[in-house]
Length: 121
Image 1 (cartoon, rainbow, N blue to C red):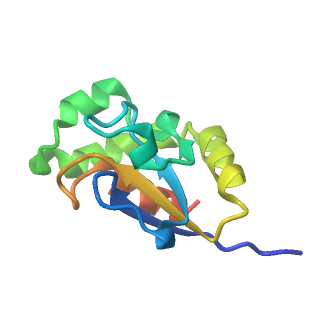
Image 2: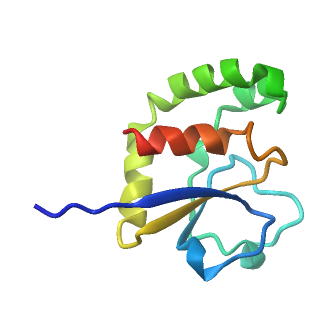
């Protein structure tokens, strides 16, 4: 039996790239404004793991809604095992996977929720 341990981390896509990022995965449904594909240096775009358009619009990055957003997003993620499996298979040769997001708030965003969900599946 081979046990492969992947280290997931999160980072704003607007932050400079770094060799320590490892496998870079964009987790937003929409391509981030003002950043070229070359500059983004994204290896995989997991847009199907992003919150639904309806949930994203409802949340509107309001920190007061983050707890409820987290609950609703986790319900959406419960139906996304195949997308998570695809991501893990694509990233499997790498030890470190950096989940990239565009939100300005580094504490109240979907990447925080997705990171926790991926670490616990």
